[in-house]
Image 1 (cartoon, rainbow, N blue to C red):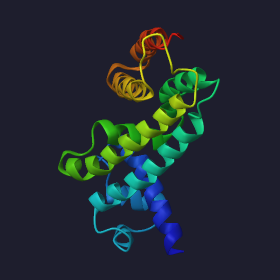
Image 2 (image 1 turned 90 degrees about the horizontal axis):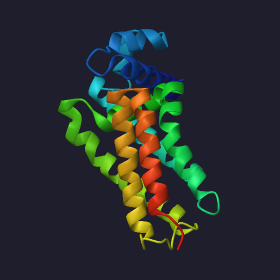
Image 3 (image 1 turned 90 degrees about the vertical axis):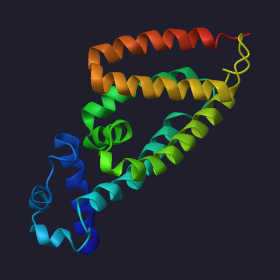
Length: 193
């Protein structure tokens, strides 16, 4: 029962943080969403900060699992890479988890910034490794411009960062235009030899 309540609290918090942001979401609302009283939250979490931070490792694991399932390499690598980028908006629109995730990546609560960034740096390295392995196991290397799998993985990480930021702050239309432009450049960069 306790584990079920803990998971329900995390899911309710994730939804509230995604919709309202960290500052506007209250423990009272989160408790109410779960059907418990606010004091019961303290059985599982000391405060709202701890509840927020408990979500980060869960979402890191989920995002790395998603990336590993999407980015397999092989003959379909371009479709996989494009699908991952196109999925930024699709997944954001369909899931509070992804909304929370992208906001935590781009704008965590200021007072938790250092604590959130530490696992995020590890996440970024792990994601880059997934991308590198997929590119190494594909026809993208060698390419006309002699770009290595390592360089392409770093470039692709920059593409992800740019598109997430553009989507969050510029909106869907600007995101789609940027995706189109970035993808054209990527295609030119990986022309076969």
